[in-house]
Amino acid sequence: TTKNGFSARYVDRSTGSINDARIDTGENIKVSNTIIPRIQEAYMLPMGEEFVLRYFDQSYEIAETFGAKLVKNTTSTSTNTEYSTDGSFLDSDIESITVSPSDARVAYVVGGASGSTVHVSKSDGTVKSTVLTSPIREWLVQWPKADTLALTTKPSALSPGYLYFIPSKGGAMEKALGAAFGLTTLVSPAATEILFSGSDKNTFGTALYTIKTKTQTEFPLKTLPEKCVWSKKVATQIFCAVPKTIPSALYPDAWYQGTISFSDELWSINTTDGTASLLASPNATVAPRGIDAIHLSLNKEETVLLFINKKEGSLWVLDLRE
Image 1 (cartoon, rainbow, N blue to C red):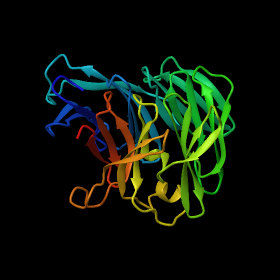
Image 2: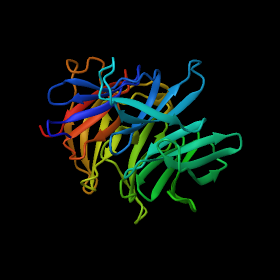
Image 3: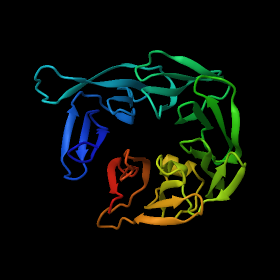
Image 4: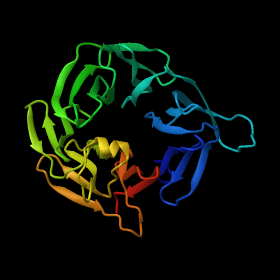
């Protein structure tokens, strides 16, 4: 949010340029025009000036991870942008990565022949510490709150999944959830609740697990945690993209592999009483191919919901003030 209105900062997938999209006017402003092609994933750190960019090399066989930072241009350039991008590479063979909710650090999993290691470092890879060495290679890492990492085994309907908590400074693992086939998770910002889904024959179920009471309740809507974001202002609120229909398939495998695509509506859910409010149901005029929403995020004031349409990688915004 700026004094002139709302802007969404994003990384262009094809070029790696960093841009600000004015939500109120639709104007697009290039912040940095440094070329980094073939971007697959981009993560922005809390202050909006540091990024982690993941992309394939020219062979499309090796995934590189680059810690980038905006550097203000002191002289005029042909690109005519306010910033350029500088940075350094992180480790090779990174399986998954996430950013700190509170400072300029990242946590990531590096795979190896005998398992994996989990590291915490600055976004440029410096001041690195190892917080876990595990015989399991494939973890998905979340950083719900400053002192806690959450590690979920990569999901498949053909194998049981587990979720563990570990201190972000390193220490003993604590099992929080398991074993559920096809387990995918989204931990709340206070690390007190877990939204999770699990395979159920040729569909999936969605539930909410409360850690303190060790109780599980059915979620009022059927969706995948990867299609949701927790509110940081209201502990009992979560925003989700919810498929209108769910074709029979092996989940979440078919959705991850792209053989199944959803057409979503946007909902707000109260986790205390299970009530749900429809926010938007995009029609064919707005989204001819439908919206299969991923990477949901909220601005600081939580007046704007942003997400990526998995169908073609486009950036969308929903104004929650309307």
